[in-house]
Amino acid sequence: MVILSALLLGAHSQATQVVVLDPGHGGVDGGACWGGLREKNLTLMIAQRVESVLRSRGIRTVMTRRSDRFVPLYARAALANGFRSAVLISIHCNADPQHEARGIETFYTGSSGYRLARSIHTRLDHRTSTPNRGVKRKGFSVLLNTRGAAALVECGFMTSRSERMLLATAAYQQRIARAIADGITASIR
Image 1 (spheres, rainbow, N blue to C red):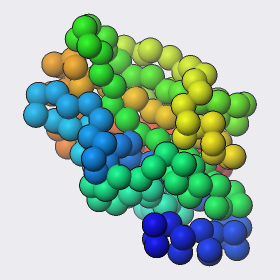
Image 2 (image 1 turned 60 degrees about the horizontal axis):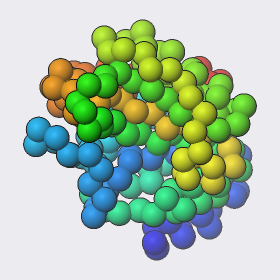
Image 3 (image 1 turned 45 degrees about the horizontal axis):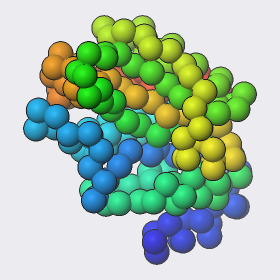
């Protein structure tokens, strides 16, 4: 929490757009786990790739976590809220107990969240070979408690063998990351 407090203290003086990347889960919250893969690890790898692309474009980024540690949902939203102008993108991988569902989907609340989610989702749909499950309004805590535009991206289903195999590869993680970064860039510029 010392890192979060330090970031928040200097946050309000920043005038430039900040992209807060939120790798879902972490620490004691592993998220979905299938076929030897843990969601918390995949989301961190994808978020780090998104950050690299955005930074190469001169876009300022902040991560809610940079390692395998637990960060409460309220703290994730509070970090984004600590900046005058920030968007938050929460990155996840989906799971279906029946092992039937496949595809990408992106969630939002509010009109600014919708524009951000649609921008990201459109690019993901064009760059992935998985079904398009759409852009949907959903009251996830991290979305509801973030004042600026926020979107939650489900990058694929870990319970789908074919999608899990894709998600495990660096090349596919990079393809997803570039699509998310392209959507963010188009939305904030």
